[in-house]
Length: 175
Ligand SMILES: [Zn+2]
Ligand SMILES: [Zn+2]
Image (cartoon, rainbow, N blue to C red; front, side, top):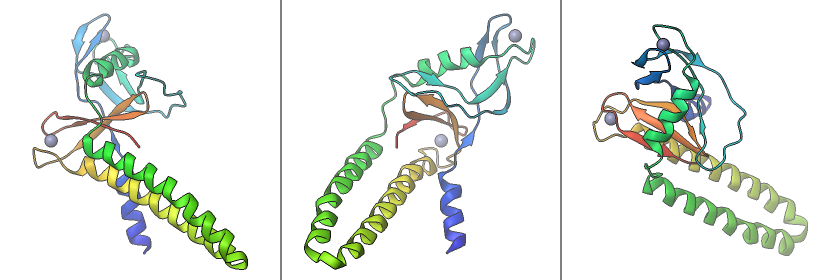
């Protein structure tokens, strides 16, 4: 049970990375040095990029954060969230909305058993969220190249931007 939970958690985690060339204001086009990543509490609006990776120019050590933001927009602005992901969101919203009358109704009619219905409701939504997150994450474990190695490059608005290291395919997901 715990092992499966750990596997589930690991599957949800994405691997940060940056393998695309950037333009340094001083040196021109360079392959940036990736120095880990920092969490960000930016508010994700519209198509604003959020870069988590710490990127520096290999020659002059300039911070390439801004260049990375521009690059992310350039790469992903025209990439749509995958159809499977969009269908999952529709299903998730539908199942969430569908559960409300079900559990409220059960709670009202069952009276003293209503607490049982509340408990079932909590379990239902817990499982629903787990299922949804698991399904969205599973998209990153498939690729046309057969060797999916998706690296998380940052966020564009509220969606997550990935690039497969093996074949360069770009992937945009939303949860
Ligand atoms: Zn430079
Ligand atoms: Zn690939």
